[in-house]
Image 1 (tube, helix red, strand yellow):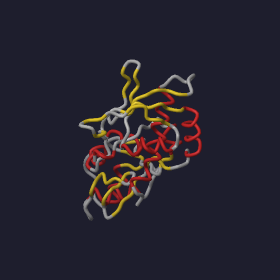
Image 2: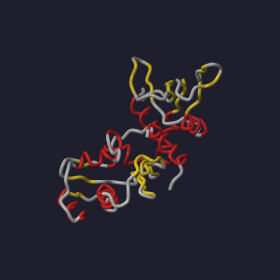
Image 3: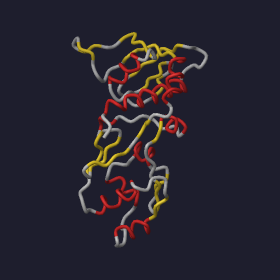
Image 4: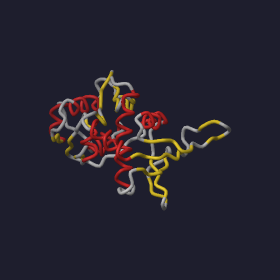
Length: 212
């Protein structure tokens, strides 16, 4: 299983893409703020989230950003506080070009646990319907699977909604959008091993896995 640190690269790339899209394209350097909240635009001050402080440190090491100011609370830098940084667009574009084929999002199953980008997001139990169903889905990426298909896999009638079943193992909101381009009551399509380039083309965002 990939270690969490590996995914800092993909988080950094998706942040770079967000900044490039939303800031003034005519200026080579933008002054922005990074903080541990959802992306939003606050007047002239554009703010972006990051999954971990290590992502900011990684961007600094790649000469993409330079920290202008980091806030301090009780003389200690807060992990979830605002960072004011200068963002170098030419370096960001080159970084994206060089890393476009690297993985942005990936699902793995280890001992009946589901891991996304190295973070455990759900625990299944051997022999239970959801474990049988998801392992079948996992082994057939890019294939439209219906309730009838899953009834054959279970060797009994599949009951319930596919949306609800995927919700039971935490494929909701962002994770649902990333890994299930098709998901309805009666049919679904699961995709895996999504590259940075694919994530950008699908306009996917980065996810704070520390909330799982």
